[in-house]
Figure 1 (cartoon, rainbow, N blue to C red):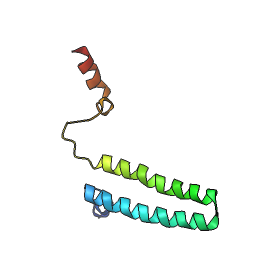
Figure 2: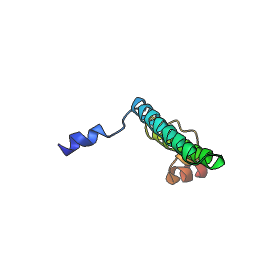
Figure 3: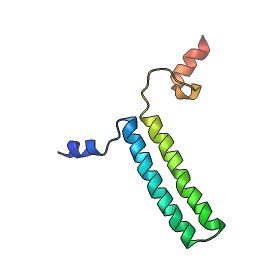
Figure 4: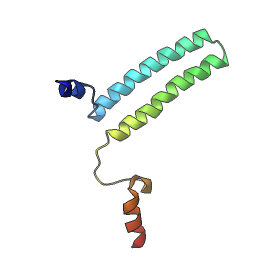
Length: 90
């Protein structure tokens, strides 16, 4: 039973990740507007930017985790260190 409940909270596809990012963005902008009302001026807007900036960080991580790995990687840092040694030896 616990396994069934755990599956409900697991993000498996990019579509689910996009829905979670959208929900995070709505909550962050709402919280940001509360900060702007509570702290008028630059302080409130900086807190607003901090709230929305965290959505970009979390969204990038969610999109990266749900990426289908087809073996074509973009950066050398994506490869494990053991493969880097093999490539450099050739």
